[in-house]
Image (cartoon, rainbow, N blue to C red):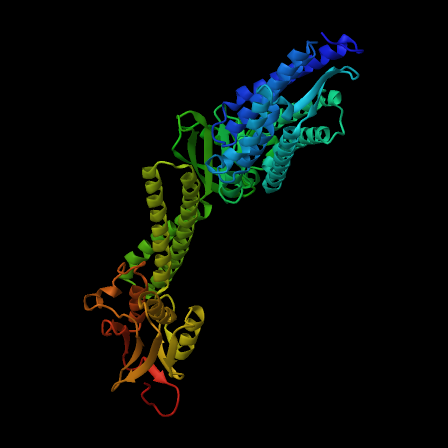
Length: 604
């Protein structure tokens, strides 16, 4: 054993510390096998193995006085020194949640310099390119092997500095992109990485002697900080970007628990609703976190897939939540935990109660209607109230459906990134298209509901044309019209009729360069004429284009236009010649049109 001028106590102590660090890192490595839903876990495990190799080698240095043995240990240890900085970078990249680095074509280039370093160390005759002039230095507390770098040694050093600096940058980005729930764990990880990287950079720059650099204290501190981040604050349990996008921004309450019923994560909405503290709740058992809500604890123990209901009292107000519990499993079917989504249905329940009460009132009024004609006004009032509540219920229902569909679309988006099987990708796309189709139907239902909702009014056709032109890109189309004083009596949504005509010309006219609008008066009635010079509409399509669902897009526009005009007995038909342009004629009966100047005349 080499002791130099120092007592055996230092060598034994430092070796024991390195063995303690090895034990800590080994425990973290064993624990990491339970994490299956984080793409950073595999490079993290490799990095731990490299650290363990380095600490074992450092603990053995103190127990030999043979230069050949020291050089052999140094060569073995260089597997860690060469590749650690690269895996540092890969871990941080994967953890932040950028594009999977393993699918990048440039990823193999990161391993070129480390691999050449190892080859030079183990190939006789080429070691001098990496290091030379080996000798013992026993002047410090710990005996060390001193050597001079060759030309490739400096390349190796610069490569390590680049990757360490990149790792620090990515960790800082990760820290500032996190919310308070996860920042504590990232703080400890970041502090540990910074200490380790700065220590290495200071040594590389020549500010720290080799024997001081080999002291175990910085690595011990790094291991402790990493253990706190992982075991106390669950820093590696979930992918940060996915959590920020889903859990932090959605209004529903999210609770994620482990298989042993400990809280892994909660979103701000959950913490606010149950008056929980983010920091103290993470890692605690559900019986401790929700001790004030025994009914909720019993719901947590129910089987997966069931929808439960829970009433949460907030002062005099009682909030009603629909709870959906689902299991989180990996691809092998191993259960990782459970996720609970609590959706507030308080307003929906109240609306349903109000609707039920209104229906009861309406039934009572209907029974008296045959005998008491004076009760008609009461019936009309009840009907008006019911329609108002139905409108409210429809609006709330559409809102809830939209939110749920957007949640599904969000999960489909993240699922697609993980899919590799073409059939699964095709099904994912079909599910995505189905959700978008439902959203289109919801939007149409809302528009259709507003048709006839308000009293008809006199519409200035010229003002509406100018308004529609301002909404569409018609810079390359010449618009010809001179109907400044023409008005027609129609639903307030008449603007959508002209918008649909212009939109049809843009989307389906293909070569439209000119649009004409004029009024053709008859004896008592008149026609509002709209004509373009596009490709026109085929004879067999002139009637069906006004049917709901027909067309290249949603099939809503012309159907809705026909319904809007029908409110005031106006009709629309297509009379254009195929190949020469489309021509829409809006027939306006007598009494539903007027020209606001003294002398009426035809406008063409």
